[in-house]
Image (cartoon, rainbow, N blue to C red; front, side):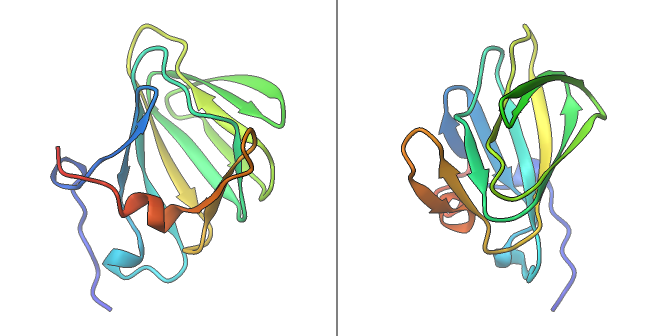
Length: 135
C-alpha cells in the first residue's frame, strides 16, 4: 500500500443538506484498512440530525464555534476542542453562530455506519461518500 497525500480543495464534496458539506479524506479508496476521516463544513445555522455509529468517533473543531449534542447533553465547543464519542451514543453537531464552522472527524473502523435516530435508517459511511462530487 502506498502512502497518500490528500488536499481537501482538490477532493469531491458530499452535500449533506441543511448547510453541511463533507469532504471525505482517508477512506478505503486511498487504501485505509482501519480508519475513515474527513472534514465537514457547517454554514451559519446548519445542523445535522441526531445519529449514532457502530464504532467510536472523535471530532475536533477546526474553525468557529459548535454545539455538540452528545447523548442529549449540549456542549459549547470552540476551535481545538475535541470530542470522543463511544459507539451507539446518539449525537449531532450544530452551528448556532453567525460564522462558518468546520470539524475534522475520524471513525475507528472502515466499516463505519451512521444510523439516524429519527428514522432508524442505517447507511454505510463509505456508501454515503461515494455520492461526493467535485464542486
